[in-house]
Length: 106
Image 1 (cartoon, rainbow, N blue to C red):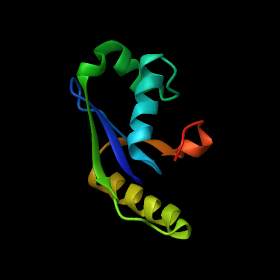
Image 2: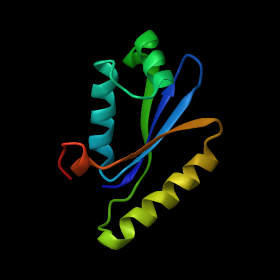
Image 3: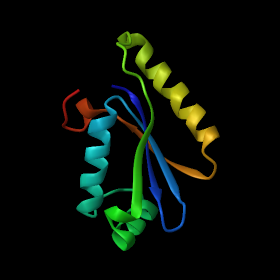
Image 4: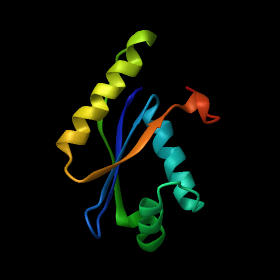
């Protein structure tokens, strides 16, 4: 299911937002990268390394559960990302994840 995921550092309030075509898979993938110290976002990785998983709140503020036609999925996901970038102040965008392009299943 497409959606928005967030990581918030509880120590300093820094927020990170991503969009995904499979939001549950994206959280698992991002967390695995962080645990292996391989996430490309240096700030997020540094905070994760310093504070650990218990220093973060991971959330899914929005997820679409109904079936969306393929031609509309990208547009809808971008609209969701734009909306949440405005709602959350001072948030860093982590990108859009597509499990089918990252070795996962969709």
